[in-house]
Length: 244
Length: 203
Image (tube, rainbow over the protein chains, first blue to last red):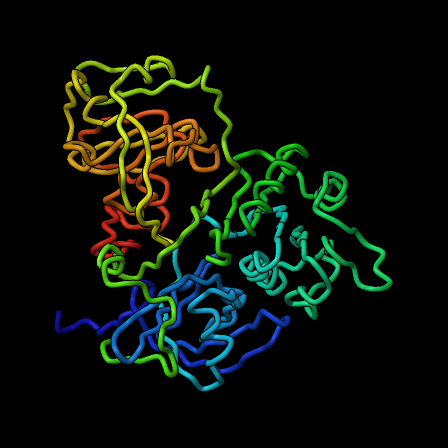
């Protein structure tokens, strides 16, 4: 063994102390946190990290958050966190964490709800379900901008649009409660016409659907009805209290 | 990372000591029953439903919905623990013990793959399914098991993380070797003991 170069122990699996290098408010209840990692490794778009908070008396809370950044965005990750009123970890990030703070994380984890370059791709996100989809969209923009991929993004109102400044022609929005003034696009829940309009050029293809259970259930039914194969629909659902 | 303290974190969702004692490390108490499924929810009519015990067995078994309901039915009070961090404490299911299902099947292997309508699968040692540790359940808290939670029938193996309790169960395949299932091939731990926090491959 003496002749071998020692290899650094790397994620996934190892807890590590990251440093929050920037915080971007996305909406009144959603912020994106850029976290620099000493043991950074490339993730697959769609994977998640775990976050662990430790109180001075040893009490701990853990949650999982989807990665929003592209794996080409080296040296760290971006986690976009929805503030849940009765949550324990998300309010800490929103109300306590400032730039320069250290946070304990490990990842990236699991390899089902991940995009590995399949094409064409339809992304369907409800609310903060857009987060892992944004990692896919960003990665596609950086690597294969011509690859057919579109995002169908359902939000309640203009205030709730995460990544508003990054949504281009490859993203189609619908407002379920209240559309902004002058909005000429779709209004209301995702429906067969909207799916047909957005997905027509993406079939046969792979679909990634992320959001609340009710949203995912409704959206997957529509996708099955519009011709997506069951095995080509991958879903990720939030728990009952919101983001996993 | 012993010694790391999250600046300004006090923890405001702490639970009483008796509940905390029932909560594996890294879990929190959830009052609801979240749904986590990797794809569309399968739809299985009870008239089409069959449950099998097959693979390495002396006598393969199969039950229709009606036949299954002639087997001894029990109510199982339990706590369940999802790898995504929530635990539901003090819930209950109704169903048939795997001991009953294996009775007379003469299993000839040490491992089992639970396989489901819709294609899901999960693996575990046979000994984790026997001795009153596992059930095929059709009721949750006295009501028919909802489709999104695996209805008409799912597995219940409450001592392991809940992905080891397959929804929409179709059969138990006895194996002479261990064969990783759906999530076990995609990053989750091969065994999944919540008390040892065996969430991922490297845990």
